[in-house]
Length: 60
Image (cartoon, rainbow, N blue to C red; front, top):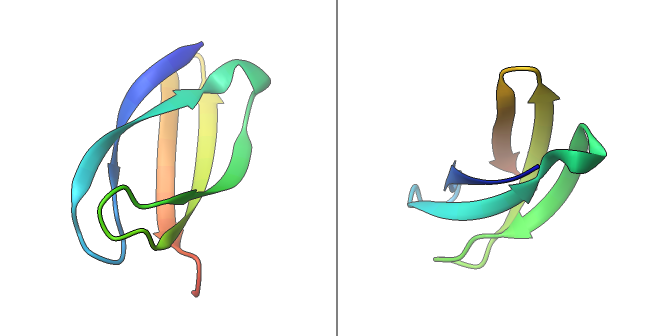
């Protein structure tokens, strides 16, 4: 299940679209911000209702 979600960068505050693949279930990964290039720690949770993306700074 590939979906487009909105990601809000915890460094620069910009929001942009990104594509996630929920077919592998819950995941944790690092994605660089498309605006400021800082590393964002992403946690993807897959439920029956859809996918949820939680983001936080990599240095927290």
